[in-house]
Amino acid sequence: MAIGNMPAQSSSSPAILLIEPDQDLALAFRELIAVAYHASVTLDVVSSLYEGLTYLQTHHVSLILMNLSLPDDTGQEAVARVRRTACSSAVIGFHRTADATVLSDAIRAGAHEVLPIVPPSAETLRLSITSALIRATRPLTATEPAPSIPASPTLSLPLAKIAHDLNNSLTSIKGYTDILLARLSAEDPAHYCAEQIKLACGRAENLIKLLPRTTSTSPAPQPSRPINNAPAA
Image (cartoon, rainbow, N blue to C red; front, side, top):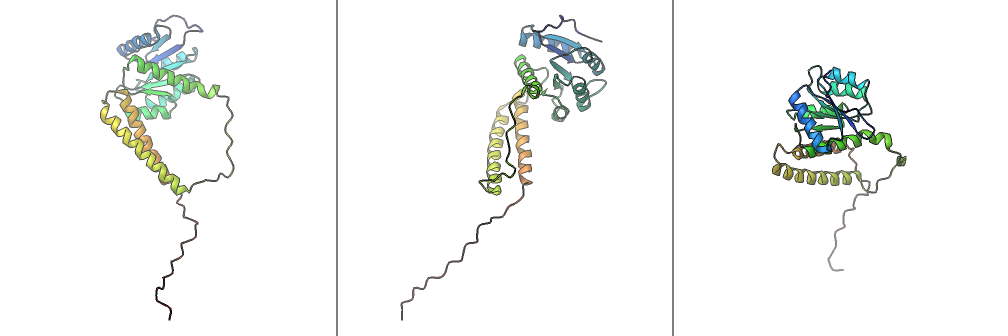
């Protein structure tokens, strides 16, 4: 097992496992993590999914960084196997080609974050790690009661009106997103995020189309009677 020589984990030092077969990329991640966290994080490295799963059976880590194109498994299945073995750890997937399909499949399989640009900047990596850790621990720490929902909610506005207003809002969001996409370079991590926002708006618009069409229950207006302006006989 190709484990990086790092100091033993302590209670104040978060542990990260990197599953990456490319030694140069693994070294790049090691340096980025050292810059982002000032060497306060324990990082171990393995070169295959099998080694990673074996490691996780005897070690607990806060975060798992994994290549989505590993020699022994790829994509959704690799993420799913890691999540089954280390269900309480945050998982970040990355892919050298920034393939949107591979990245979205990783999210569907249980990854908490993805990195569209590899290697990322130290600040982007730190933000992604923070986001992934929040998402991984949120279900375990949330104590607020679920809001009660009325059995038969009554809408104060007609459903067609709500759908119309939602469509207008989504159109505005997509318009601003197009402006961002035009100003951001394809290499900017924010470009991928803007693309995902636009795709999400499209999915929301399709869902709105599935809403049942309602007809107005207001009485039909009565035809106006003609006014007779003829003088009385």
